[in-house]
Amino acid sequence: MRAVVQRVLSASVEVEGRVVSAIGPGLLVLVGVHETDTDSDADYICRKVLNMRLFPNDKTEKAWDQSVSLGIIYLS
Image 1 (tube, rainbow, N blue to C red):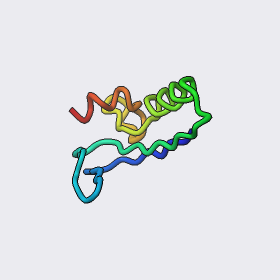
Image 2 (image 1 turned 45 degrees about the horizontal axis):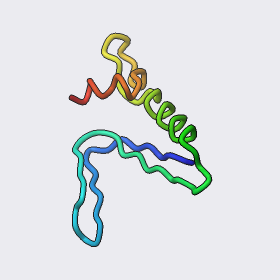
Image 3 (image 1 turned 180 degrees about the vertical axis):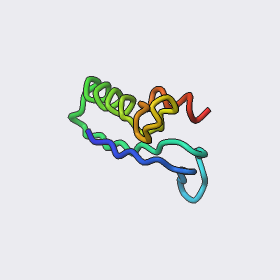
């Protein structure tokens, strides 16, 4: 299992030319799943993405210091 994470201003998913989902500013996560992947692989990837430090921390003034799980509050 692999995941590619990208910060985006907007993103959408189209199926047969029709938009089925869209977001504004946030994270686009593309996940590749193989038939041999397990639930524990999915849990591992999810934890890795949630703990990535991709957002600014206002307290420390560091640009890449806030985890994704805390950054969700930042984007709200």
